[in-house]
Image (cartoon, rainbow, N blue to C red; front, side, top):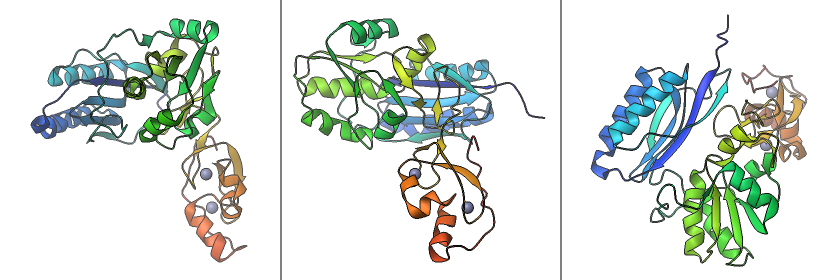
Length: 311
Ligand SMILES: [Zn+2]
Ligand SMILES: [Zn+2]
């Protein structure tokens, strides 16, 4: 029998400096406690703070870890953004150290103080979006933009966030223009806004709590499509439920919604739009089958142990 209680998922971040010589021991404590509590998720940890998505059987268990973490680190209480899923969105619990908790590629760019006037609530965001002369920029990657974004939003066409500075430098946007920026949970914009200020943009605002916070308050309003997430859910829909439309392409890892049956092993899977134009990828369910299809087309093989979601 399958457990029908949905897993509770919290996304959170906080910028506050952590002494470099304490990172290792704090990391170990954070990870150990999460494992002991039976949680699953990924937490990124650096001298500039912490950023994570974690999940548990109940909100209480997730909140207990968040409380433990904020007290251990001397941070204020986290303000998580919640969603849920029938299946675990992660395989295990891990705390990983990186130079930055979100990679702009410029560790010296540090966010504005919390609660500064540059954060718009979903209602303030809608007002500006609907009634003002604004430029809206999606600070996420091209494949995130592709499956869902805000009305009017520009796509910087970046492969990863570290390319955002270059995009802004080359973008043809007047420096005085009111600019609205957004991302999944708000953390990328914390740095993007400072980077834009540094480049001379004076009037930049970010969506507080990102798309996840917006959809919790305003489903089916100004955000169209689904919101990509970096875990096994792939994306969440307008009601923050795991996507029913997308899987991950077995060939390239992008969101995939084209059903195929593998010519080599008959496995059903979903592949992405780009791969559906490639002879080997569009006819196979996995890198392994693509290889064998290339060397011995027409020959059948054992089904691959791939179970991509929604298939
Ligand atoms: Zn693909
Ligand atoms: Zn196959």
